[in-house]
Amino acid sequence: MKKIIFLFLVLISFKVSAQEINIIPQPVQLRPGLYPTDKFKIDNQTIIFITDDKAMNSATLLAEYLFKHYKLNLKISNTAGDGNKNSIKLVLSDQLYENPNKYFVSVLSTTLNAGASSEQGLFYAVQSIIQLLPVTTSDELFIPSVDIIDYPRFDYRGMHLDVSRHFFDVAFIKQYIDYLALHKMNYFHWHLTDDHGWRIEIKKYPKLTEIGAWRNGSIIGLWPGKGNENIKYQVLPNEIKITPKDAVIKTDGIRHGGFYTQEQIKEVIDYAAKRYITIIPEIEMPAHSMALLAAYPELGTEPNKKYTVAETWGMMNKYNNVLQASDTTFKFLENVLTEVMALFPSPYIHIGGDEASKVWWKQSAVSQQVMKANDLKTESELQSYFIRRMEKFVNSKGKTIIGWNEILQGGLAPNAVVMSWQGEKGGIEAAKQNHKAIMTPENKMYFNHGQFVKEDSLTASTPSLLADVYNYEPVPAELNGEQAKYIWGAQGCLWSEYITNPAKVQYQLFPRLDALSEVLWSPKEKRNYPDFQKRLKAQFQRYDLMGITYSKRYLAN
Image (cartoon, rainbow, N blue to C red; front, side, top):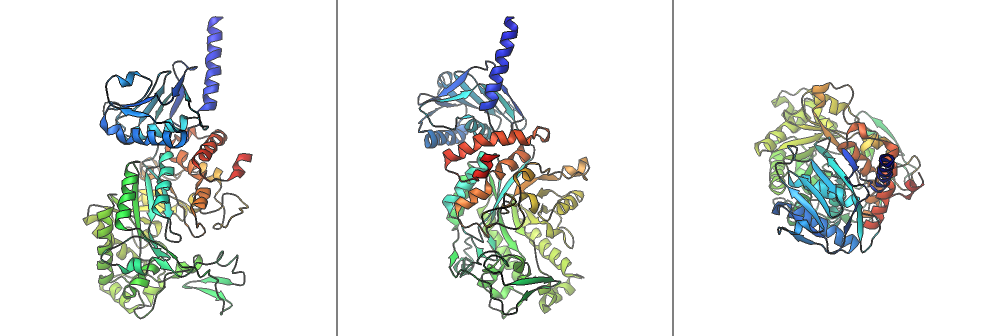
């Protein structure tokens, strides 16, 4: 009888613990602790004890979080004996696990133990500890007894932000990185250049920011659509036909822009590194370069044209001019990338490569001469030639290029990583050619799209529903086991055409980032959408605590 009562109490305590534990992404293993009814108390007497000075970074970030959101001021110590007090013990030992991302958390009544074999693994443990904290503030915090063993499914867990269409300052970029860190993401794809603004200081070419970082207005509403209802368009092979011919696309006439100095770039890189996030910079080429051409028109295919920084987006921009595939252009880009690579320690440089309209090369005498001199039969082969030239240079500096799936056109560069956005086809093709692929199909992974079928705010085209994000499987079924190894991971993208302020960034990001993090971190077989929805309710309370904007419509589900 006593045994039955004990088992009943264990089951009840497990149920209680399960209700209190709402970690996203879902850990690999999570179970009640040895004494399930125990709870660990955190107050101002609690010590964060570290066994290795290399754990100081994670300890400091945990202490800062507790002070910021709970007003608790915890001491950090590496003094023997302090670990035996009421302590959060952060253990760093290369003897723990072979997997550097693997960690454990074990909560007892007087000690919360967490450990890993690497600094980043310990940092992930701290993120789980943060999500064990109650979502209401108090002088005393209680964490339920629990044991966690955890590690990620994919090596690449990425999120993107476009700062070209709309610029976001350094303070917000740091916040954005914190959001990624909370969800155990490890790559931030920073889209720094495009038609609508050049956002990174290049000392050798100051006009890139003096001219290219500013535009004289932004389109009002959709193109065509809200604010431009009178405009119709038809996509033809090499152009967009607009009717009526004298149509005027409405812009707001407000000057918009900004850029990051190299010192600010270094500051952000250092901030991300402390959160074990690698920043991948993107310098767009050969298309999406109107801001560059506004500053240095001699690099375009129309040498006498006065280019301007683009004020509209949508279908029209797929037919904007491209960079001339000349030695002058290549030398310019090499100089730009030399400065970029000196700033970013990332082994990867994203060079864009998408939506290059071939009509400009077709009608350019210089481009045709380049094609003839290099025995190139089509403009698609010229694009491949362009990308390969740039890849050879980037490789010579010990780094690898990433490009959107259009870099497959005309033949894939030898060492390139493919980011597949036009569905999964590009990623599948890359994997079959033994190239790493990052899956970011627009219909699932573009968070600038609406979150609901009927979205109140201005967003891009068809919705990307939370359930669709959560149920996305990055490894296509048609790949065999060997080919599937080349699916490096996946990424969410946030393009800022209709995102003008931090609150809307947050609204578009949450809770789809939660869903994406679970897709990329948690075991495939553990994904459970109804359970995820339950855990979201606690996450929303945490977002309230952190002052993060999200859609209240999810609270009704």
